[in-house]
Image 1: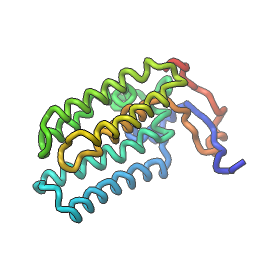
Image 2 (image 1 turned 180 degrees about the vertical axis):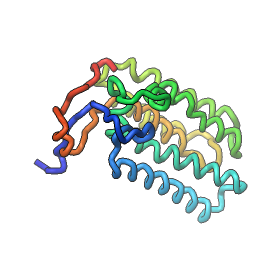
Image 3 (image 1 turned 120 degrees about the vertical axis):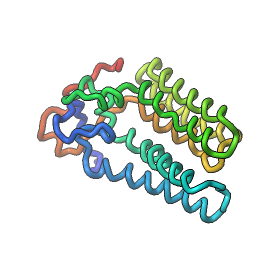
Image 4 (image 1 turned 45 degrees about the vertical axis):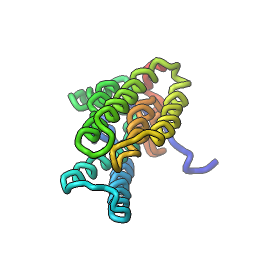
Length: 218
């Protein structure tokens, strides 16, 4: 057995290390990976703009695009973190707060992601319909996936992750944002699927491996 496969499943949320973004109790590496990924996304966009000269943006559009790339690209990894999965799907949080209620309500969390509409309105390209379309598709996915039996939710979400880039690639899009539909669906639709929150083996010292597991219907 690969020693790196050793882990425990622990649904209990700690009362310390509160973090509604990465999940309460997130480790240093869990915080580092999404941050580095978001910065890498900005670097890719900057390199594309510099090498091709295809983006006729003003300085504020570049600044806004950098913020959006960091949030969305890094957010895909953030929502895949085991600490985030535990935080989003555990039966209850140890320290209730408004930020926790927002992140744990997947429909509401997806609904506030109006980035596609903002991009369509503020960047040159095809018009507002593009933003409304992908906003609606993503929100619909977040609403529909929980209606699927638990054992099929991940493949159902992956169906959206597989098809959306194909559809988006043959449609017009705002300059520099052809990637957004795929990233948005990965972050919000696939990212909302319940997964077992694996913890480092050292976590075994604090108790049993599956305590606090939420009902399978959640």
